[in-house]
Image (tube, rainbow, N blue to C red; front, side):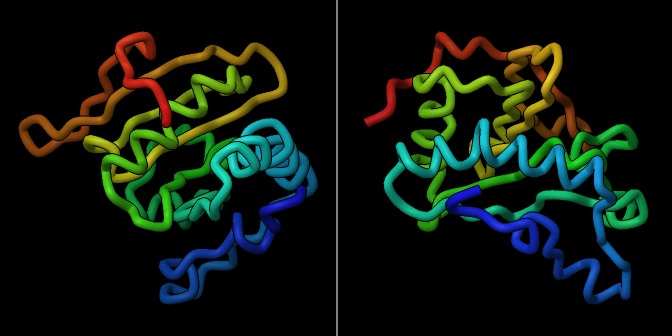
Length: 155
């Protein structure tokens, strides 16, 4: 872990506001370290600038409070929602595309609402290399499979 800390990956304004203790156990910490070592650190090094983690580990109570999926990889310490410092959709798109271009061993990439942020996950066994786009339809979030080959190339 070079560019990220466990504290950064567990920080949550929602948890603080609601008094939720968001402390990972040993297995979840191990998963967070793997996520950083295999995805986030190599991505940060190649990006050449800071990457903001907006949500990392979420205990089940916090996950429910933020409306996370019941079986979210965040609760296992396997996922992070990230964005660029500028948080422009264009830069976030470039960051997303860089994950693909670097051939990082991601389990999932979810382009959240036209690159408002990027969900990326890693699991040590059987990474699916699943690429999805999250869209709002009828007031609900819908996840649509997307082909990474249709992406723009990173600059």
